[in-house]
Image (cartoon, rainbow, N blue to C red):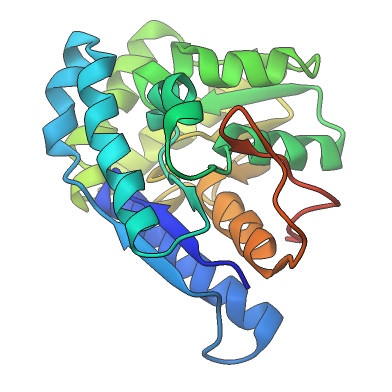
Length: 248
């Protein structure tokens, strides 16, 4: 088995990814078993000024440090359970010491398995308006809708002031569900939970659309890769998955 490195950015997203990977390992290998997992958690607070000012180089220094830490601990590849972080990771992937499994590519494989053509996207303001999902979806011919600007601002504030800090309020859940319903009314067939904390409050049980949980999908695909005894295929710093990937 390969050793999986989890490069946490936010604590909540990193923890959910870790737990999901452990449980997915048990599903494949039996109780209490999973691939060896090493975790780095460079504090996200060190990157916040860079995000707010658009200083990607500053953010890159801290993300690179996290990848180096899991490499030094013996990881064969890494995942970063943070959609927004991929804006910067895409710029530096080829220079990192390990290949990564790209969260948007994992999500797009899931979309393809369902045959959806019009998707909604929730996340931070940078994810909803940035290039990571726009490019990944566009190259597959998928239409993407995001909330209007006023709603994007409300969701972004809730993510950083509440969800990333482990604060979960009923009124915030209602806000996110309203955003999902707005996307449904605009023709979206599903919604990508493109922030790794959103699955903590929006689920298939309460959402008015099918949900695509980027955090848990990334963890499940990572376990499948770790259990795959074939050599890894890497392009420009990213793993190229073979076969059908993780089952639900």
